[in-house]
Length: 408
Picture 1 (cartoon, rainbow, N blue to C red):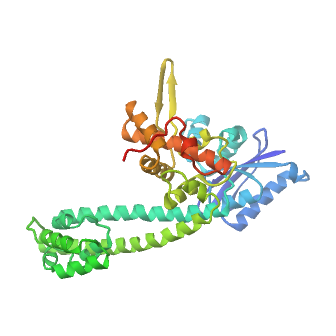
Picture 2 (picture 1 turned 90 degrees about the vertical axis):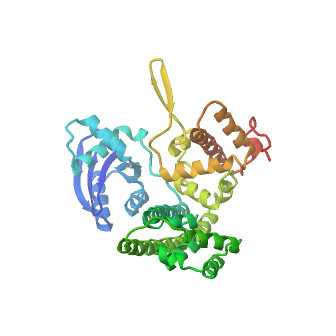
Picture 3 (picture 1 turned 45 degrees about the horizontal axis):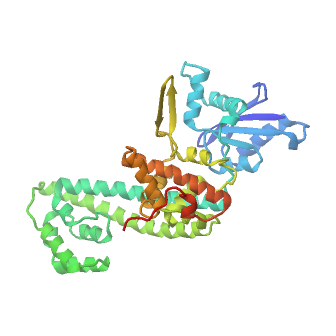
């Protein structure tokens, strides 16, 4: 016996529909988010099972997410849960009708249809360990804060360019602790010009900078240059904004450093950490991001090809008649592809085989980013093999036809 459940979720409720193998609707309801809603869903399914031996019943659930307490509870109940990509659901909706009509109950029906008809085409929610889930939570937060720091740094740069361009000449790293302290002390051209070399040197010393006398002199000279400015009232407004941005960036720096320690601790305790960090270009932080996005379910990726497809590093082929073109995947996990491309960029200076493979792609006419993506795709395959066999990376095994010494 097989039952198919479509679950269209919202923040505080779920519209669910249960179908049999012929597509007949057996039950539908709106249940609340949380323990009470989950209990009601279990009761609905139990009613349909009736006197049938539960061990002989398969329950397949389609839902447009693959994480959260609700999904965890579905998996814990023994259901086969499929996290349907919203783009897949949108395309499937067009397959069933062209009117554009949409409702939550209709989406629950659509999701039940999807797992009933096309479960073999969908990706089942992985059974990642709690350790991997912890790495994912802390790593994603760490990376999000880094992205936020970049955004706030750009906002700071734009503000300084509009009223205090001398600061951009004086400070090369706008998110550095010494820069933020100096901008807080002197956020406008007049107060910055009044800073003494002694005061600047003290800030640089607290930031543990090297070559303090020369750097202090350069900053002092740059802040005293005559440049175009804004009216006094506008400058004061900008100065208040810069102080606020500097305070936010200082807090972000502090929390990023704190979370980095947490990432290192959680990742270091995972059994796969040693294999992952043995790969060229993957240190603790980058390795933690790769583990977080791939997960650690040993059955999730049946082959290296499937892991590459999930990573988004493998190309897609568009063929029609005599025309055949390989294109980069547009749909991918941003966090994962970012980590893998970064790994590839580092690997070309760490691994002779990776460098030779990269050079080969460039010699074929591939642009820099394309060659990095091709190298990243190859590195994903190598990582897959190491994780499957539990073996550490070996340069000669990974690149039997490419290995050669790196140029010094």
